Amino acid sequence: MRIGILGSGRMGGTLGSIWARAGHAVTFSYSRSPAGLERLAREAGARAGTPAEAVRGADAVLLAVHWSRIDDVLTQAGDLDGRIIVNCCVPLDAADRELIVGTTTSGAELLAERLPGARLVSAFNTAPSEALAALARGWGSAPPPHLLYYGDDAEAKTVAAGLIRDAGYHPLDAGPLRTARFAEPFAMVTAVLAYEQPGGPALVYRFDRLGGEAEETDEPHS
Amino acid sequence: MRIGILGSGRMGGTLGSIWARAGHAVTFSYSRSPAGLERLAREAGARAGTPAEAVRGADAVLLAVHWSRIDDVLTQAGDLDGRIIVNCCVPLDAADRELIVGTTTSGAELLAERLPGARLVSAFNTAPSEALAALARGWGSAPPPHLLYYGDDAEAKTVAAGLIRDAGYHPLDAGPLRTARFAEPFAMVTAVLAYEQPGGPALVYRFDRLGGEAEETDEPHS
Image 1 (cartoon, rainbow over the protein chains, first blue to last red):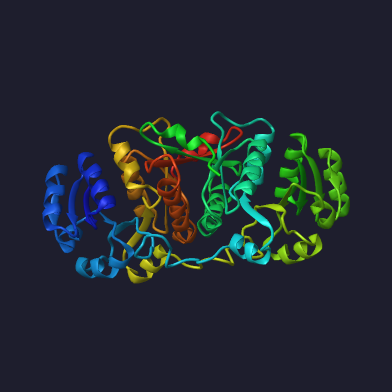
Image 2 (tube, rainbow over the protein chains, first blue to last red; image 1 turned 90 degrees about the horizontal axis):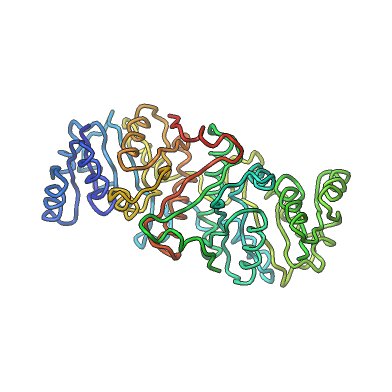
């Protein structure tokens, strides 16, 4: 396939190089550094060009720019009608900390406001009840599935981690309560997969690390 | 531990039963059916009570009601100051389809509006570039990690699935482009885990099914 890369930073550069090595004809474009773009293309066995050149005749276009650059790169790319575009952009602020399209709060944070004296931790919202039941029946596997938990109270998190283990999961610390604004939509991803995609609702997940640090993530950090 | 269950439906009922069997002293409360609550408690070797009774003296309180019932159950529970609360609620609408605290659109959907003639599919936003690089170096494992992709154009999804395989992942269909409103925050979850939690940034994930249907999810559905 002919693949045009719009945005040749870390994501676009890495993916384009992988695809070039897999045998695709890749054209990189849109980098802060023209020299870096040329070097990237040379090392990957690909071409460097303008966004319009990358898009012309492409069977697939990877869109991999910072959200703040979307308008600029699309304007430079020109007509995209009929093109297959693989989008890996997430609408992030300049600091890459917040979704600028999306929520700035969460159910958990609203609960914390409602119950300022309580010691709140969130967990189990990414576990379909069918998966809980299956684990309780001993249908689990080794290593155990992960379950995200997050909150601002260390002792409450330790208690939650124990209850998560009691349910047959490995507790995976996802940080402070504000993670809820990302993890509550993630709960919806698990619901989409469990209830709207084939395979059945007893859905579990694991996060792992590649390259030798895999087991480090298996310890809870509260 | 003494555990109070606020909301004894599917989630609360299942979790409370698991914890009762693990040896905790569980009190169920807040069910549509008082008879069902009694039966649930009897079968689990636990107690049934009011929300206030469930909370009194509890070392941990599970909050597991529909979001629309939060105010009611908290009012009935009474003072929660100092209590450890494990929240598994997600702020859902009555149909359990949408987050009512959270976004009603996404970057991908805005892109689709901006490019009505293009054939958009989202992918790779849940893959840290470090994980892509590690997979390219052959640091993958069998079975391969999953990568979510979603969109409204079947052919674009097929192309994306091929590119995902080229990068060493198993493509996991997460449905239509509107999944973006959940999957883009999920991308933030992967970023939190990769960059703010221990273990290193080469983060990958897999979803699996418990109980005999596990492999069905391994086929892409576009």
